[in-house]
Figure (cartoon, rainbow, N blue to C red):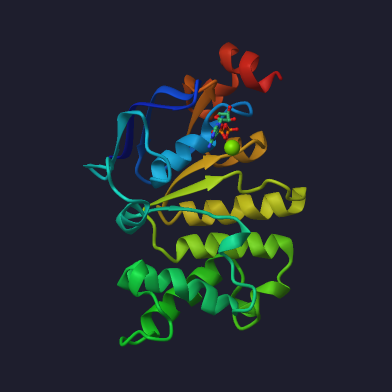
Length: 248
Ligand code: ADP
Ligand code: MG
């Protein structure tokens, strides 16, 4: 089943066409990579999917419903969550408190997510919090303040924050950027584990070893246009892709 359908989406900034008539279908339960040179429009496309940017033209359909005029908050409630880097982490709070916030937002709605005023039990949201911390291997540090985490562990906490929303579609923009080889490999394992639970993912990634290890389908963007799409083997051998990106 197709969970996400992007049809003829265009977005320009001033005179620059960041996305031109982009089409993309993402199948439920798969990992779909977006690759391409710098400035290809990858991050712009993810921002259109979260509702942060509105396309000039075209349509995005998630789970059978159009996202036109839907607020970023509502899109999040419908099940699309992007992994945000560090600013979303509260250093003074424990890891469990950090993941409880999105878990509570997913349960009660973001505007009611006030840890200190909720009139409902926190038992179930704490259970979600503990589970997602286990998923990313941070259960032993659950009661420590987030500010003491190493950089790699902070990135894992960001993944846990995203998972705590219980998303159906997870968006990741360069999840291994700045990581050492060892950390990158740990992240690949982690993302594979999450995939095996059926969470659909769209992942923007520069590191081809990550892309080829994780993806079911790869879409190649260059200058705002889709230039190729297919499984890892087909994309790897595509002359247009080699010219525009892999051979650079
Ligand atoms: P990628 O993530 O593939 O590197 P981006 O989506 O960030 O590419 O950017 C695509 C193009 O749009 C680039 O030329 C970039 O400079 C431009 N761009 C992105 N965001 C903005 C913005 N908010 N205002 C103006 N230009 C932008
Ligand atoms: Mg980018």
